[in-house]
Length: 129
Image (cartoon, rainbow, N blue to C red; front, side, top):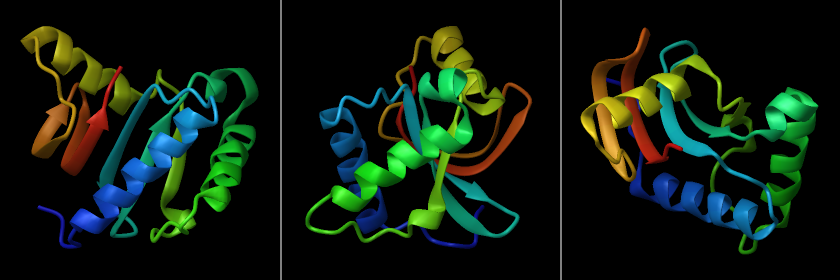
């Protein structure tokens, strides 16, 4: 289990960012907090098709632009944000779990399990498409 605690405030602030991204017409395919054992921190991971079209820097830049506009100011560290492709191995693995078991992983905690071939020590999933 992750040693750092993901607080309910961080979950709420992550949801505020996701809502702001959607309001700005930024397509959020999937979103989750994932514990990264190296460097022992939580990462707010956002999957968007923009990543495949424009690359990681452009996608991250657009997320960060919306992040900076949210009022009141978000109480999460912008360095915790990670942009990935909807084709990312973890996202694909979580999608496969949903399809195989006919589950909706939205708003669920997932600990000590594999998503396809990716180890998930700890995660809070907002949604997976």
